[in-house]
Length: 203
Image (cartoon, rainbow, N blue to C red):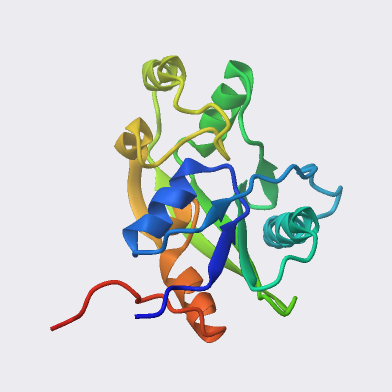
């Protein structure tokens, strides 16, 4: 069986690497990229997610200096309440503000996924999931802030951790909330003839 083409994951997120492994995809290389993630003054959440995913893919391609035969996969996840884009929480104050804004409300998790083919063709799409939080007490918010799970997370929470206690409804892709919509990502790869199902036989 021929080996899969060379795939670079342009992300520092261990969660995205784990999600790809879940569907049998092992990038040959992980290449974190550094992009300014500041939203434009009138930029919508979907537009931001797509712009950042594309920018990460383009940055990775420049870092690879046009290396031939490489696919580049990049993604960025944005959490929004209406048009309000919540930050990737870096301080307790930021995390507390994010959780308070999500308490008792439905919000959107939008992941932009960008795939650059070896020929330099860019494909991208945004996937949206709606998530409803129960109304949280001050003690519940304090409990979550003390956990530290919010650090660096879009919207100040990680659904695969303790924040699962707060979620009473999800409409859409769960893996999208974690950081990479697997169905859509696999479809993009397959659409460019990247062999997603390369392991084992379905005998």
